[in-house]
Length: 430
Ligand code: GLY
Ligand code: MN
Ligand code: MN
Image 1: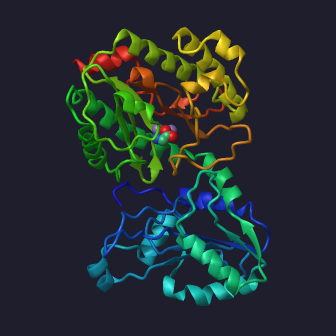
Image 2: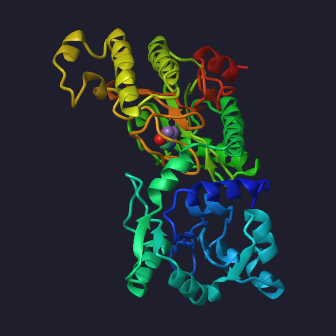
Image 3: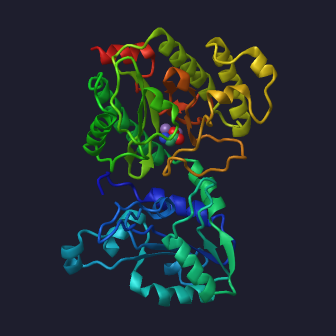
């Protein structure tokens, strides 16, 4: 791994949080992701399943974690199954976790090779009343591809039809949403790397530069700082492209007089950062661009103050709508009549601000969390209002990553990343 070692006690604590919410006499299984094929013998870079990583720190393919807190054999209360390695295999396949290294990484003492799984799992299931399956219940998940976990669930349901099954997802969504200090530190590091990338751009961007050249600068800075790269597909959208919310082509030349929207974040140790900044291609915003920019900044500054314990996100999103409405009227984009005639389903502000303001952030960029419950200290959210005006070839979004505190304003993990329009201009012209 490129990232620095993470203390194993984080993963031990995470496992305890999970097992303390399991039904008595049950076991839970978590599978790694596959390495996805391209064609011929080509493969996509490996990405670990975030739940397996969260519970074990194991960051390699063909890995299984079994948690069985009431197993008769105490050695079987936490078990890892890993792809076999030894000195000979390492020569051909590169470094993989040995049993000792897997213990050091995860704090799990019992490690078997994967070929022992069927036999040992049968013993465990004979003793267990039920099994927790790790289905993907993220509301926006694309579930067309059959994952290693999906295949496992299908197989086990056939082999062990008499076992009661339970869902791991609700437990994981709850516990993963409240971050440990170690996790906040890792997310801060991801944000620091993103900051280095963004600062590098401020002296690089000028009329004529291509969006993909900006992407290349960021990739360079991220990789040299021990990141695997972008936490999500970067959006580098100049001029009117910024009004396409999921613009990822990044293949246009940046024109004098346009603004570039950069929605770019580095990952670090599988944790995401998620930044959006907007900068003028020629180093100076026009008066109109600055007015729209400052309207978005105002909404962001006011909205993030609402990220305090007890806030209900549905209410929060309504309050941000009101903040945005006020700014859009001031900018002459909507009128009081538009507001008077609006419907609850389609408020007038949605014409220029059509997405949500915040999402959970963590091991996944659109991280898991229970949206209907009041928010708590230790949760991390983005705050990312935007105004998109296709008729003016202008889209502005500003996004920071914020940790909810016990009291007071949230901690801004991106507080050192320039955001004031004047600061951006000064740095671009330094
Ligand atoms: N970059 C993805 C998002 O802001 O939600
Ligand atoms: Mn975001
Ligand atoms: Mn973003």
